[in-house]
Image 1 (tube, each protein chain N blue to C red):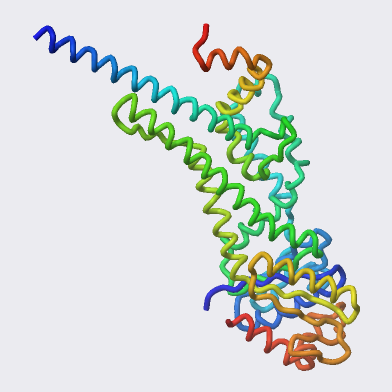
Image 2: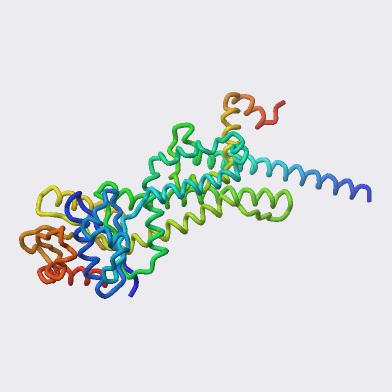
Length: 286
Length: 91
């Protein structure tokens, strides 16, 4: 079976972490599952236990991680500084490379940390299911938009760069009678970026999006808005999960769950919400 | 034979002049395209939106020529008449 990626989104406090944990525990009884907290205000350790996050305790076939985006941001900026050292080596004489530290404060630096962390998880782990416990709405949607937006920037720059290369080739054909093809390093970097973002966009296009909502009107309205935004991005596999409901509303409904004892009381939770888990499995098998 | 040689020289000079004219036009267009590329990547100095950090970070080490181009253009913008004269090769 192909690996499946699931994103849990929704208004703050609706129970994304709880639902992520429940889905992960259910699936990890038979397959390799990773649950990754992408919410900077991580709660995963509170639900699963710090020992599981720190790999000191094994839970079935489950890998659980609270992702550190700052680490990815810092590593990337270190890499940029290295690149600058060779091109702008005269700056090292003036100790001016430290001024590049300001990039850490760039408006999309945090988003970049998330993108790089996501890419690393997808490429470098071998799992059957990837469950991403996302931050509240605005940050989650911005993450999804970032990948599409960056891809469009890269495509526009590639088109412009192609025109420059074609022009250079025309000039060399007129002057020298032959088309002199020189390696354009900028174009190579742009093509690498295009491959990078196309890969991630394809992943997002085929992922499952579970929007968690509670009984209150506000979380319903926000869930509707999230669905509209995801559909605008052409994501088809979008489902609502009703959490903390007194009675089942449809197959994707969970009752009141004691989040302090999710792991210990999972067998009881599974028995009481069988329809929910079977329905999730059905969605993920499509 | 001398006449044939003169005719050959004439057409060779005409060909060279044509090539220079054509090359000049393409070189000017190339210069403008490179200016636009520089502006798109560094236009933030003029208040234009900057590409995402990931793109800037990947390209910046290779864009020192474009950066120089932009600074030259900014400098020349202080003398637009001089630049126009240079386009028309007026000394």
